[in-house]
Length: 189
Image (cartoon, rainbow, N blue to C red):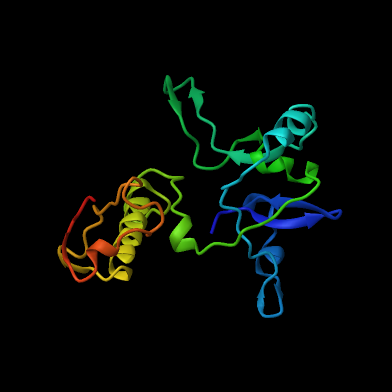
């Protein structure tokens, strides 16, 4: 999966971006598990003092070189074209580039299906990390919350249009009122 992974470099926490992760690093195992298996899903919390006193004061964060397909003007066709292969380099910085500046840091491991529904690509047949796949993941999650609370789901069980407002439940809590009740899919609670 195209995500950066948590690691240490020179004794400091860091994220190795997926585009910078060699194939041997990506498949390296330790104790039967991936050595670099802690994906960075970009849910970060920073102390405001750290932002004010450290991040803003320190502009010396690294750049990541990302090979990109950069549209160019075709003089013969008199139109902008997007090449089939990367033709340029984009220099990027990321919020996690400040991790090595921290004096202390904690990592919280979460279940992917509960916490990670990325949107990186446009909707298309067979595409991943799209608005459609994120909606399906979120819909499946709230259906799980209701069944865990004891609800009986009916209707179109395959629907990906189910939702629970964060005002009703933020993480599946407070849904006991649906125990033993029938809830028709799709639903919006």
